[in-house]
Image (cartoon, rainbow over all chains, first blue to last red; front, side, top):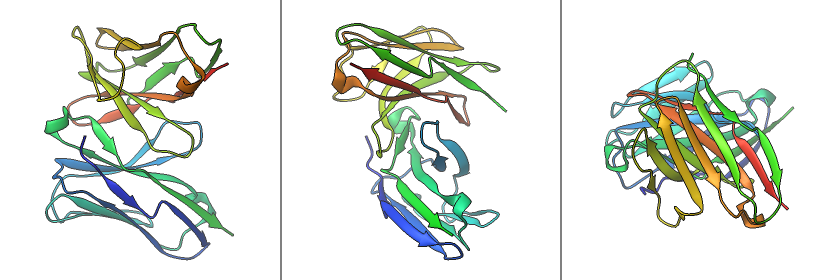
Length: 112
Length: 113
């Protein structure tokens, strides 16, 4: 199992603030995915990044894949209460049979 | 989009009994299915990888005789928790994958009393 370190583990901010979540590993991944999960539900895919240095934007969310394909970040601009949830990064590699190895998750709370 | 259905959504069972959880890909054939386990306020931990018609590959520390996985078709995988104990209580999630994408089920809550 390839270890993915995700930080911060918990984040509580006020509406309108910006935040960044980091996902780091010593291993190279063929792709890295970001998910959001609500309590009692399965994770929902936000984005997949596959190319080193790739940047993808999804409305107020910006995702970046490191040049070496070992790390990634999620930046949220002007956070809203609706952004509250558990954010998970997951790396995929042929070495693990393309199973997803998840980071520990970042629990985000955005208060009005 | 592709849909993966898990059943049951939640189940309560007595200690010592066995429980079966189904994972179905409703509108596509999955080359591989994965089973994850998630404890409260924690992330998903991969339990096993399942390919149709072959034995599942279990992650280190996961007892294959306790967590029986059957993958009889390209659209159905089952996880049976045998002789369940309270420490097996958890949220179990499956995913079905194609070459390019993973699709997750809604999860199944298991409570062993």
